Image (cartoon, rainbow, N blue to C red; front, side, top):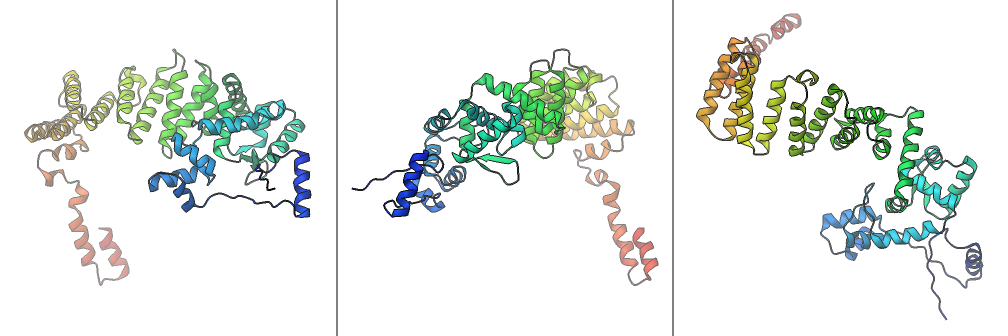
Length: 412
């Protein structure tokens, strides 16, 4: 008679493990260790194009069970993502078999991150260290957790396991755990970027300190990760107290507008810029004309040319002096708007009027820009561009001279 049994390493009872060991020694049992599928085999298992098959293989790690469930449910393994129902139920059975303290620790680890630092998970679980270490040993023996790449750092055996454990804990427990994590990280002097996720998940409405953390995290992420920056700025605005200083609110709104624009979410960026225009003028670090021009520029990009045109004309009408630098800036934007509309007569007209305003205001920076819309390209060229032929002639004339003389010619 032939019997076949399948089990995950570390999840056999002591009696079963001893029986298997004895059978292996006597030759009555043959053990086959299954590794992950190769990429080719995984692609044969799912009906998907090459791009989707690559994603499924990467996110499943070659585990055929995870692969099939991810393909069926179409979810991703990113942090906070949904978990395929069958996978979630399977992992829930593993977690339900744990002792209360062990379950408490693994749920704290899921909040702490993946990979996670042992000390942070211990603080989140609020367990004595000895008890937490015992729980850690059991979890690694069961292969729910594995050693990380550096000491005192661990990780879940798969991102889906972490997501399932996180989703399986109660909402109240998750909220408290994130709050503990935020406090623990603050006590250790962690950067706003490290603390932001936990603050976002646990901060109470009106928490001014949390707003500062999220604002600083948004500023840190603005250049390298604008999508994260937008998330932190949005969270800060969501929990901000009603009496938040207008200057702080303006900083958050403008930061959000920039981050959304950087990720191509122009509609959201436009809404944020419009919110900035509702704030007191002295609270916004941008001059009002620049703010209006920025809104109109985004409106043009999303195809709202009529709204952009009307906004710019209203702003121009509100100016006390049409011969000012602000007027020249608005006329430049109106010339751009006419260009988008392919109304080249209006474009040239606004360009000429803007040129006159820039000249009257002695705005040397604005004048070349508006001239580009008048057809006077030579006048629009910055002086440095027009000086290039002279510089090249000087360089040629200096060839063959002595080193110092050649240097003087080139410096000309």
